[in-house]
Image 1: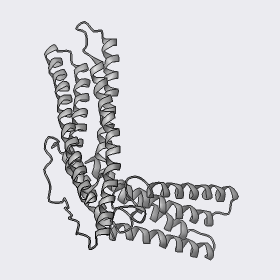
Image 2: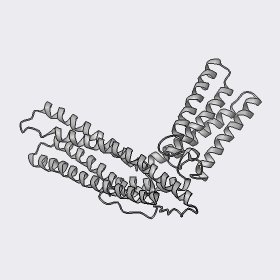
Image 3: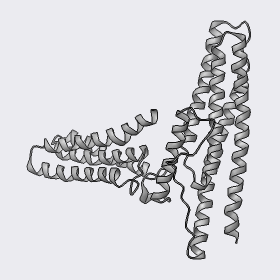
Image 4: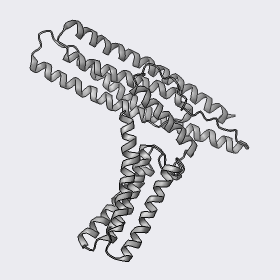
Amino acid sequence: MNQQIADIALMMVLPLGITFTAILMSASADTRTQKMMGAFLSFLIVAMDCVFFFAKNSFIAYNCDGGLLLSFASLFFFAIISFIRFDDRAAKAGNIFLAFFMLSAFMGIAYWDRPTFIPTSDYTAEEIAAMNTKYQDYIASFQNGESGQMMPSSSQIVRHKAQAGGQASKSSNDDKDLSRLGSYLIDAETVIKRMYDITNAIDAFGTLPSNISESERETRSSQALAINNNAVALNKKVLGLFHPHESSDAHKELIQASECVRLAAYALYSYTLQENPEQQLIQYKQSRDQIGQMKIYLKRFWNATEALQSNNQQPTEQ
């Protein structure tokens, strides 16, 4: 449900709202010249919207990131319309600054590490469309409470690369695959380090004394809540981590590991809220068990990535 709200807000409401506002701003211009220039710029905004909605993943990735990219581009033209529309010097200066900042935001998202603007991306439109579909499957599976098993859905797209005609083209593709996998592993190592930081914090948290006062319990609960918030943020980071298509199976293991960290932190927070010793023991044991599961998933992740590296290096050496 949360992802659906984000999709509606960032892919529909925000871009179309800016478009209608720009059209109304152009229509309310005082002079004929202002109206003509505003109509031309509004036409460009409408054209970008049509490309985004009807030619999906052709120039802009059809996801929330693409919606933000489209919105910043539309706001750039909207600032130009406002610059033309108003005669006040302060308003003109403010709109020039707004146009510059919106253009900066557009460039920042266009060259983001997660591909959004197709012309500046190393990935093809088909690859990005397939991976966007996989992200929707990941998010939907966790929101539906199916984090224990990641079953493939009918919406998942499986692409098989055709063999290149020449040996040079094949070698270039192999090098590109290795480069993508290497970048993904660097990002994965960063989130894994954060996983261990959180589990170390859980280990250092220890247990609550039997005669703990209410003020001390509240303090320890706040500490556990901070650990839980970090684990939730890490889980979202892993879900949004862009990965090569061939590493999908390995990435599932990484997602499962981050989910275990989140559950362990939540069990620790629940442990601090319990006053019944039996319930406290159950919650604390669940937290420790989830940490053990995390290590199992991480071991599977490293085994899968080592196999991928070996498979990619063999064709390159040949």
